[in-house]
Image (cartoon, rainbow over all chains, first blue to last red; front, side):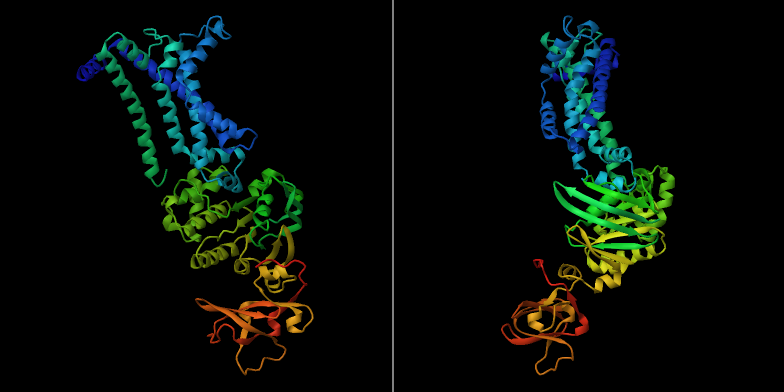
Length: 233
Length: 334
């Protein structure tokens, strides 16, 4: 069974099967977009959580940590309710579109990014910002230097965010609807194939999914390791 | 450029941590602020660059003119107690101060290199900063601050945590660098030898207040009260009831010695009888604790000590090595 799955995967990829490639492209588009948006939102939030001195900081940090374990199905349900035709955002007609999937996956990844970014920045020397400013840096420049200092752990944060969304199926299914050629991604395609008993096809999708995750991680990890080892970054 | 402040107050959670009426470091001058741990030295340094949120200051002047925050930021560079380096090469770290001030990378590296040379770490330029020893890292931190050629340089105990040899080397090298600089330098330290080696003038900071201020040699040799005496190493006390003289006398323990049996004390010398409590060998010197009628007296000597605990003996110190200080209202705990 596994072998036939492997063969089927090879056939789908090598023969340039239109459906498979559009599914892969959509998977990458949705998950990468969601990850980028989650980074844009989550890193500033994580920075504030790590460095800020405001009441409720610890409660928010605990909330972000809890959010790391947010079940995708719950997020999917929440977004579906919001986007439902008669729901508060129903007039935009976004349900069962890739945009809705990006929104849902972004909601899944943002707490992951925020909590891990906060942890990454707290690893840096607590006097780092003070020293940078004592050398004449403006607040903004000092903050940029801090983010640059934590670039390797922040890269790992991006990986964790991408990993969380590319592998989830609940939210993609609920808000995307698994429509062939429109909102079908690798996870939902694998679920559908499995439910139809097309195990070889399902395994093929699973393998492609693994390959994508591995390729993205390999790229980033190589960059990370090269940087960590080189003396002059 | 000179830097001065007036009416500097730091009140943290209702507790006054620092109150400095006025302080000035002149162009090209090095001023040491000498104080024990917790005296408010680092707070003072941070307040001078507006990095102490609890600080208020009536006036903060650069060259006699009120300085706004951006001016202060460009004029001043500070080295913190611990060398906080970036994950980068030594040269890039030395260039970081310039980079943070907007100098392009290649130019910043070019400008920073001579300072690595001046601090004798040019051979480490390409090494990752994380692989450095404590002394090397501290040299990088100093080079980084010097490289921005700021007009005011603030140094917060830059030699803490270094072993004696490394520290002496760095002090000597820093002295050579500062001799060629026109910067006003404020050095915060708890070590009077560092002040003696580097500073033209010295201020004694105790419990948030400047207690003495003047030429380094004068201040280090003339404590006005018991706390300052303690800070300056005049730790051996001779109360009036022991010496029969007016007022409390203090002396450096290394200037005190034990009177040999049958030896006549020098004229004018302070002589105090007591019994030997213990002898502690400290490598090059020996510490001798003697119990007297008015409490323990410590002597540091290089001579061989033959007396045994319990033996009666006399401690002596030349009159010129004693200092009269204000009577203790509040004796610091040893």
